[in-house]
Amino acid sequence: MQVDSAQLYRMRLPFRQSFKHALAERQSSESLLLHLTASVDGEVVSGFGEALPRAYVSGETLEQTEAAIRQFLPALSQVAFQSVGDIARFCEAFESRFEQQQCARALLELALLDLLSKVRKTPLADWFGGLQAGRIQYSAVVSDEAPTALAKLVEQMRGFAVGPLKLKVGRDLKRIHQQLELLRTAYPDNDIRLDANGAWEDVPAADAAQIIERYAISCLEQPAIVTDTQALVTVHGRIKSRCDVRIVLDEQVRLRPVLQQLIQAQVLDCLNIKISKVGGLLNALQFHQMASAAGLQCQLGANVGESSLMTSAAQLFAGLTGDLIYHEGAYGTLLLEQDLCEPPVMFDAALQADVSRFATALGWGVGPLDLAHPGLQAL
Picture 1 (tube, rainbow, N blue to C red):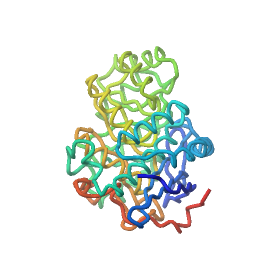
Picture 2: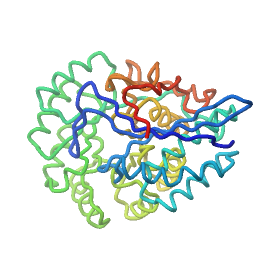
Picture 3: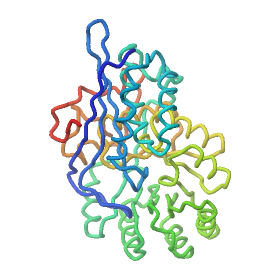
Picture 4: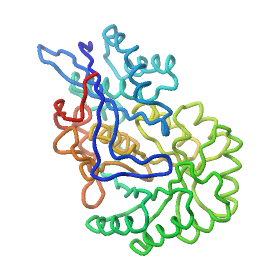
């Protein structure tokens, strides 16, 4: 397979309502789309990749990702991609040059995988040992809303068979108690976990433990974001010495050497893997393998505002692994005013999704992408 052309787009997908957490409040999703083409028997075949650079998640901006991609795109036409191994080697060469640009790597890799699958007319699942799961259960991820707004959101959620819940929380402990009182009243038996996005670094361990025990919280995600591993050990140790809760890391982990260091320091129980953040599907599978070998659990994360393209890549990852304890994302047009394709890839009324389609689907298995979408700007 020879790549004939590459077109980069900046993408802005407005939300139906804002989404808040400790690090940001968003009313739209800003991301990048890469469109590659190849010719097969006179027919033009397209492959697409998406990445969502967020400075507070992956340490990258849209401008940095775009600049890194532009430097590497000319090399695409010099490589004949015949296998996933060829794509892996190309992306490893990119990562060795741009180690901190994991979103850019994801953009390249996802577009190449999509294109190769379509050119070779082979489902991606066939190249990764086949599917280990056919259906997945999504969590409802709840924005850090004031109690009155949260009460309205809970009312809206009554139309769905809600299973696991994740609440985004800040530093205001009184507000957190009010939020959890509402959620526990509506969902007395559901698995509820908290995502502090680094906001709990200075929350006293006794207060954290009181919240965790009172509301039967199963997991605490990213209580602190610190570069010093020993400081992270201290923060997590204070919390775990007072209560039994799984510690999940997300923003802290986007590079394999960092994950290995944190595994050795024993500072996490579960890893939140986002395809865009860690550099694509291949890296995500490696992260999962490293975590599993260390006896750690993994969950599928999502950047708020992903299109059906990234949702599908994430669902394939979930289907290939088969043992992720939580799945996030797939909100589709419940959140986005307009997705990139029709029908959008999203969960159903039971907050579930069928991933068995990847046994036969080519590439990401989405409908034709609307390149005339009002949110797309060619670069």
